[in-house]
Image 1 (spheres, rainbow, N blue to C red):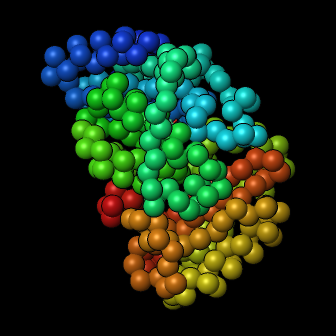
Image 2: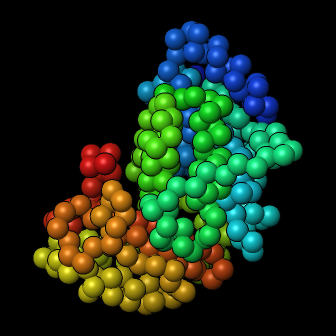
Length: 302
Ligand code: PAF
């Protein structure tokens, strides 16, 4: 939602790393707190909620728009990933964004680039197993953006829960200044998690996709009803996905939310994670809930 309290001035768009550094240096000199919202564009209300949070907490908000090639595997959707810069800039108006950094591939991965960041353990399962090299590409680009913008706070959405966990691990392990905030997933009124890839869904697939949040909510409902064993809960999630016509199922799992380790029994805050397909479109989503099946805010427990 557009924030009426924020000036409607369009953000300044910069495309060169040195230009970004210059704007940041000026803002720092003026004593401003810097907020960074890394995105791949094709913005939706989820991204805008991150921009709003940054604008509320920081004196300068930078949104980055870069479809990062190194986090896509062979045969994935890098070529057809939606690139909608003009529309993205329009959407950002009124959300307090000061700067949009929209670099070219060449200005980010300069000739001779040979470094990749690997984050072990937390990136091993789930998305890491299904998309080999994905988290290395994510960690590499996010570290580069954190180096360029040196933000006080970087904002990410809970929809990519494992991505947030990987980035937090990297920031801690490599002593990167600043903090990582994970904000709640923004959903359509019917529960579908907002995603740039929802644009790929046909009307029939869009309907099927609701099976993902239904499966996640069925897990929370079983816990609310007193079920503690992970196995029947996971079985039910898989049944719900199949009943909705979704598949193949890459994973449907219950984990503890800190290290994303698998659990046999629900004993505390639990994260249900799903990755599946509606037609050719891959869908991921997750739900964090407590022992009474109540939805939890990740910020409160992590
Ligand atoms: O979540 C995304 O859009 C991307 O993975 C990110 C964090 C912008 C890195 O390219």
